[in-house]
Image 1 (spheres, protein in one colour):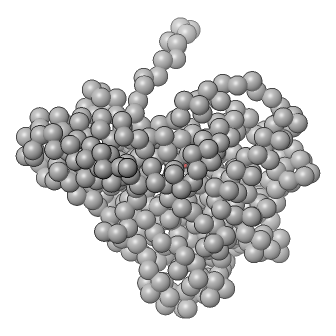
Image 2 (spheres, rainbow, N blue to C red):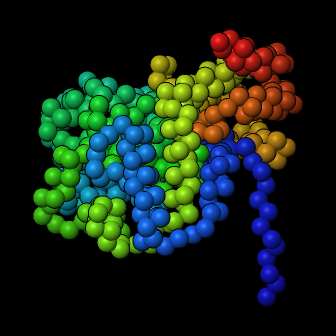
Image 3 (cartoon, protein in one colour):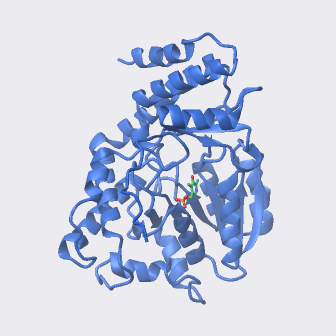
Length: 393
Ligand SMILES: *Cc1c(COP(=O)(O)O)cnc(C)c1O
């Protein structure tokens, strides 16, 4: 057998829907000495991770931890612990990830009712009131930052409605956490999950989750066993809690990465971190406007960390994305589902949300669009973004 070549991954600028750029301090943390998963050092690191996650989720929830798997496992963990066979769940679907949640819930044995909105739009209280009054679900699931459309879903009002109907609110915060405010206690969210590779500047592999005391009561009074052994939070809680009962071998070095990522966010300060995402989004949007490129999501509900924009007529989607990668080392995302071939998804998540990335991307895009004969004033995109940065105090 011939041995495969040595590892030599290219340096990329990750500006797609995730994974996003990894902060150098996080990459360095991943290579630190591995200890055992019951080593006192690791146990105290778990406590710190929990504490920093609670601060990030803005919650006092005791059950706040990181699942050893990606964001989709966070989705599965929240659903499978709250749902028993034949429970009713309303899932709000206005993009790929709402659709995935409905699929996960069906597989968990729920009777799923899909509430739908067109892609790029968000739900309001009036859309859901009659559905909840009629269906009386146990759980309502909704995606806060729909990464397939770039739409930002307001949660607070919907949470009130859900609780007026005595249901539990389950929120997908995979793309929102670390990029825009997430107020678990303030908005009375009952179950929430995220992923390490979007706005946390960490590689994929961990899914922060949190359950409210109300959700824990529901879990404690289940009549049937949770259908997933690995994701049963009661067992996971005894590893993360004071029992420290062995459950599975935690991915030690990934936890180092998350630990460092959380230190970075809290060191910067949550408000500063959100303001940085917003500033870079405004700079990017100003630049794109000069190139005649429009957003796909509803006005007033656009995510700063995921810019889904319409591909101009006559432009070759695949060629632009290929050349961005090959000639400039930049990765952006193409469209999914209903948006396939119609939108680009430009991520400004975590460490990727910085002016160097915005200017590099706009400069590269201008060159490629000009080569394809797209009409715009050359240089205007970069200049507009710079004007936003120069306007900062
Ligand atoms: C990325 C993403 C997921 C899935 O996370 P994975 O880490 O890819 O499993 C779920 N929901 C949303 C909104 C996402 O953006």
